[in-house]
Length: 115
Image (tube, rainbow, N blue to C red; front, side):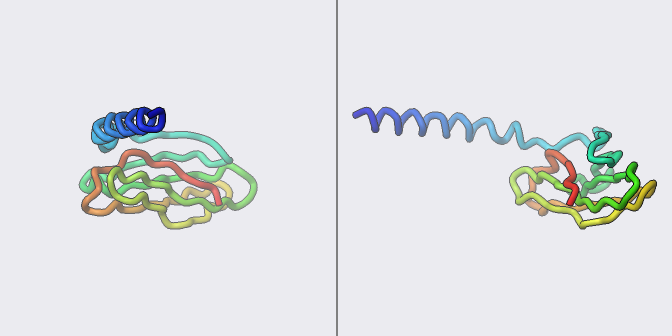
């Protein structure tokens, strides 16, 4: 009987989570660029004005050596996208971008990973 009660609790939690997902998967506003400095990169994320499923990150290398990075794009209900790998030399700015699938609910977040 304990297992059945535990199973029902888990099922209720999953149903509650499922009803909350559409609100949390709303696309980010296009004007909401995020600027951040970490790992020697000064980066600004962006979503294209005319295509809300296309976004990326522009990063300037503030170190003394080359840094390779790529964009990490969260695409709502579609699979997430990894942008192209780019190498920024000291003082140089590079861009990594990607496009979410047409059935995506929109870009929810853009970040970057140093390789």
